[in-house]
Length: 442
Image (cartoon, rainbow, N blue to C red; front, side):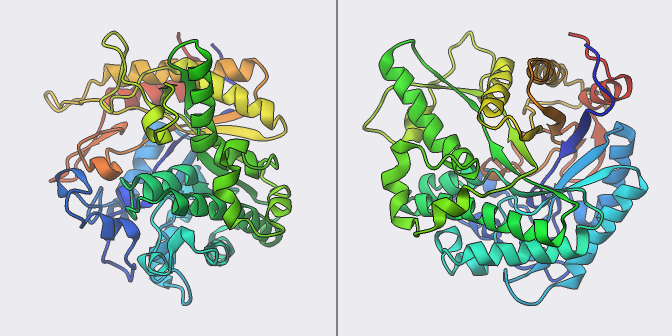
């Protein structure tokens, strides 16, 4: 399978998962700094205090990108590193770090893809209600403008959010991510405010940087019924409404799914839906990992109805997620049907496996097999008419995997958490060859 020269290949990371230096350079406290200190919140009591020490070792990591041969690198800016309390005075030391990062990427002929929010909200803003507080729309838009004013002249692509649907649901309803709240009403408020912030910040950045492509990134796993029965078909739709279309449909000007209107209605002001219908994005990032199978359970929370256990004969990753490459093709096709004018990128796709170091090498054949099939599925969607423009693997480095701590490894590069030694895995070499030769052997 031949791959066009203008198809973008990259990798994605996020600030809290790799940077470390949590108390350095004037950085403020984030909700994940606080959440990691809660008893039992994160496996093994792990934190992002050190992570991959990328804040101090970023030049080494950028050299790895050169070895990998990627044309683009998606990273996130840590809001508390730039604005320690979320508002007010800029921390120039923190912003200088990202300024250097962008310059050094360009010197290496790698396009910087800047993501403004990857879950690390300043704790001071959470103390004011966080994403439950409607004022956060303005706080985020102000922050986005400050970062874009400094970095936007060199970043051709800026993503506003990474997976706001996951942040709102796991953080405010299920409570297994920061800030650890379990209140579905608060989650509905957070979802709506994320959506409005997408609209408002996109408009502000288009005015400030009209030459920059502004987009956002959503988690969009596939959802299928557990059985071919009407009840499970309806369950699959409810799950899709709650987890995915709650953020996809509003920013596409389609309003909220009817099943969610009652939940979101208390937080909708008079002109909100009109404002959402004007959301103007240049691209949408799709993060895909697995296919969920939904079983009818109308009396239970969608999270519980969402996932049936994989059968013993189903292939899974170390996260216990089904390996379903065709689900990526399904998702891309579904989004394309809803918004055929919107350029799409796969901005996260990867897998955790139990990698082991043998004689200084990591032969992660399962990950290679996973990536090969998912890249193929993405390209099949493109061949069928989807405006797919690129693929970003998750992720460059083994890193802090949120509530799983350091127990799950997704990286193309192994990181020794004691010595911080980086060791490229076999999957790194496979991806490098794919990018170099632009041909997929399936």
